[in-house]
Image: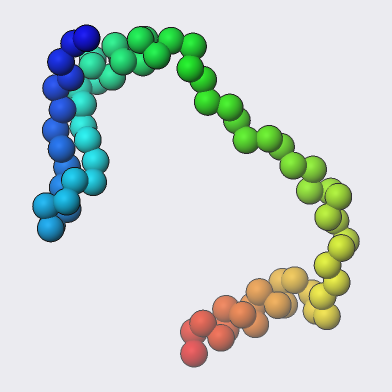
Length: 72
């Protein structure tokens, strides 16, 4: 196994929060991992929920009203 050159990134308190490695090292690691692939999240059919919620006012009017409250 090869030595991986890395830099430890710390926060103001000196706590490690991240690791940086050289891009060439990353490519080699990725190649060693081989066929590891991340799955895309499953698609959800949102049409099943269409019309289920009933509001008392138009959505755009509701949005404007909510944003006016933020500005107060």
